[in-house]
Length: 435
Image 1: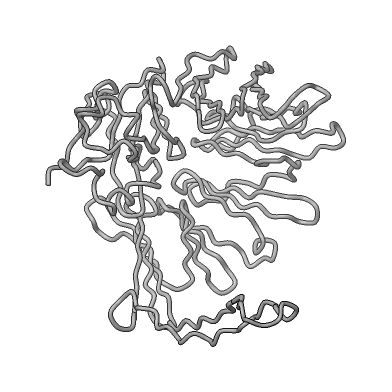
Image 2: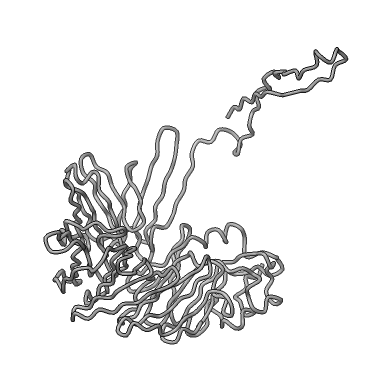
């Protein structure tokens, strides 16, 4: 790569001439010689490759050679056998699904390798919003016809219905739970200035409908479809803000709560009517268990003192019957017994925490492996490859997936403090990597 640099230099000359003639003199420097930038590789680079795990046992690869890009997605069995492969330049990986562009059609392959979806060569589907969820088991596309917006929903690769036309909402006009139940908005200007909300169970049956009693930010379906939560938008007439939520039950009951400040709904605890919710001020987060039957908070846990859950909790989250699992970065100075842990105080390490959903007690922590004798956490490459991951369910097992590797999270390891999981009060028993 050639780099040509030129510039203008201002020089003030003090010359022995009459004062009246004194003035700054602008000199233009000659262009500097061309600088040959050093190559990052010996010789001309002819090819490069990258790969990343999209989900457990689903690998995306890209090879770049002069004048060509080759992409490949491979699905593997647990024993490493190739189940399915796609190859071509017009493959696009989007997390929970892969788009394969073919002439006038787009084929959607979900990550769990069930049936593929072929989008018809219709212009309205060329300009649409595509969304995959829960390892690609559920997929929907939103598109606009005239002034109306609709959603086509697919389950396990099969068309499961069209919903709409949607009422305008600041956030999502449709929400799909991890079990496949749906809550969506419908424009119903003949009966109300606000949205009508429809709840559909995982079998595709309508459970109930209701009229929202104010402008909305978002809607959230419960796994069974028997409850729908709405998050209100600013509504000065009714003294509401985005910290106000209401849970509508199929029985007709309504439970209202205010989550302040900056309330967020994080996720449902399986097989309950409880949710993990969060309030925050800056990066100071507090997690709560909210029981929607009563509208009461069962427990609260702050991510700082005295428990020091995480310095930053922007990583992945997972919900099981027993644990709420978080991943993020923890600062070395926040770790108890820091004198027994070879980490410099200003360093950050990846940490996972498992919180008992029944009691709110911090049950266990997991830290990045530490190299004994080195004031750092693993190698730079290992540390980078562990971060930016996400939790996903596959064959009823929980996995943590990053671009470079993935692993199964055994919930018994958390309970029995194995494979690097340690008691929160004794971080000195971190799983060490000897070198």
